[in-house]
Image 1 (cartoon, rainbow, N blue to C red):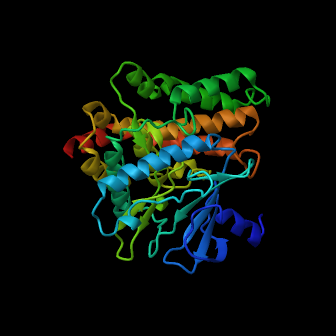
Image 2 (cartoon, one colour):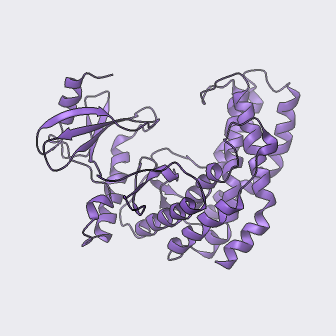
Image 3 (cartoon, helix red, strand yellow):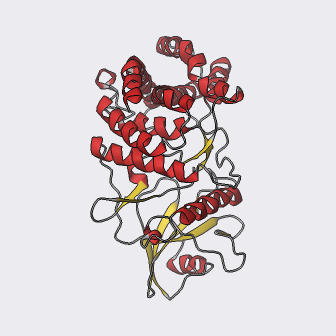
Length: 361
């Protein structure tokens, strides 16, 4: 970890008004190192080390964020609380870019939003807020004139994930294909592969557009004010062109599961329709201004796609010898696979109910 003086020198690469009084850790993010920069000026600031191992094209990453925040800022022009409703990143003094690098590490600074809170709670009320907020976020970016790129290429590409599973099975690097349970899981997942790859087919046929999506829709990626009103969306690193299914399905994969994704009690896994209905109601209310009929009618598919995709990813990693996801015990990825496969089946069984609800909105 950097010393206090080293951190101060990094922060001073940016156009921070006032004098820096203190730099201390902020939050518990898993990807980037995040610190609070206290000053004697009007504002405090957030200093982040960008995880260059995950986000290898920092220039593109910050281009996406700069374009999106500028576009949203234009939409909110005249709002007296605009500084709390969209993130603002400071330019580097030397380059004018919103990041600085010493050649090996990459850093950025944004204005700290005061009197704002995040919540971890997942219930119907906050699921509705989440749906409405992320739908509105997509709606504000639906007419962005800039060209944005994929910060993590093929992040939610089901065809790629299916291909990776087949390659893992063929290579059998860890010799696990002989396990009876592995054979059973593979036989369970493969029949749904073609159906779950529908999004990529629809896109190639010109029937499904790509939108600018957040791609990491969680309750704790929104800031709320002291009265419980949503201020803005945060954590924009995965903001990129994708299908709306990314923002819709990814939220439900974690929020609508009755247990944690690595809970071995598979019999307790279920897909919560109260969470689905609350999130879908909020999402459709704010996203209806741009949603096409194909996008709207396939929202139940999105709710099934993401647990299926995650089951495939956990399963491929187990077959490969646990090389990607961090595990706490030898069967951890297998337990995760079973859990997500059970969630997929639970969601799949409720597709008719989901469709009926979506049609009613």
